[in-house]
Image (cartoon, rainbow over all chains, first blue to last red; front, top):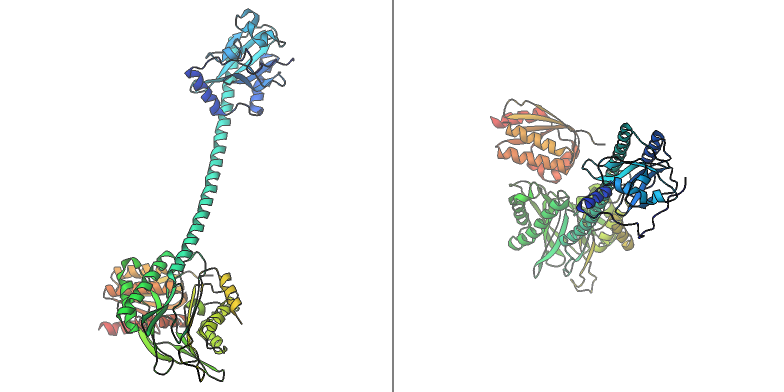
Length: 486
Length: 120
């Protein structure tokens, strides 16, 4: 079978036959099926092959009519032909009518006789085509049969050709719904991917926000208290979690300071809100009440009064510091449901005694209206120190899986030889860093020590404050600890 | 491995109800304990005795639930009493000062006797 002469693009035969609204709507329908210029497809090839066999013709094709060309979706007996021009007479005319076009002898047909397929090397003499018509009436293309000799076909043959065209439409509909499913699937995947990326960005901004919040919940640095060495450490279990641990040291007057350290029950935004309320309430109440227990009473009332605080409560140590007559400081602490403080006394011989400060009966703050808070006054003499901590320290797990506990902490403190607050904090951070699973919870540490005076040294000349604040993952805290460990 | 919480209620025919608790009281199970306690109080049993013999674990969430039940019971002119508190919980209740607000007895019988003495 000779090849069909291809119409040259832009050539004289190649023209857009109609640009009416109907043609625009038809082209929209053609594009909807998204079939133009797709690779060969078995279903359409089979329709062309069946048509050729049924009608015993050398050429049968399935075409889709584009704006300016007739494109072959399937072509049986026309090797290598992909498209021809929209010349009138054959397919170009068939597309314009609702019924099947039958031209028994092209040479006897006024229009068809001038078609390149008739006048060209193919020499088509017989042509019949049934339009492929969508349910909404758009003719997308045709199923054609061609022969090189004139012939007649019966009414039944005409109907068969129309049925084949209907089968082609069915195949196109199937293909389209498959395409739609695929597109929806791709769309869904794209949306999922976008949602995942959005979530990732959200997570990052939440982490950044939480870190900022952590910083605002902590004092930027400790104040300088003449004659006292202060040191602290803070670490959160995760950079995303806003911890419930808090501490502060601030002046109450020219010769008086207040300090507190505590732990709000729970984590996250709600705990952060309670932490914030707690910090500001303690600072404010400290200005109005001279007794630490009264300050905790004020906090208790504030936490219970605020309905938005729900059933949140905290454990807290609140204390005041005043220079003691002679040397050192008078420390008064009130405790509410908090683990005991440790009072360390280092003697000149290098020995150390560790005493738990645990006033009886101090209840959780913010849990019950009639809560009572126990207080205790002690003298922090030169060479002595005081360690405050949250339960993240005593509940840290040792290698064997048991908690460090107050006994473990006592043993650790007894084995140390330096009374300096800064060294005490550094060593404790190293202790945590050396545990197999780190802290596992937030930890706040606050230490204060009164430097020992040498014979000719004036009292109260040494005063330093160290802030080791690490609102970061545990690894960072571990590194800080190791850098500072002796 | 956490143990499922079990709640068994007895003597719930007067103002006093005894709840025997088993398993872990943690962040997962504490709300169930709290709701159960609040429901008993709402149903006319403002005096609750919690038997803790079979409690295998209790963290701050559990403590939170106990405080919630205590506050609710007191608002209803009732009481919350603990019986057979495991040693580790005694430590936590002492540390947080909650033991001063929650009377506890070695057994449910002792707690019931105290309740009867209190009521008469």
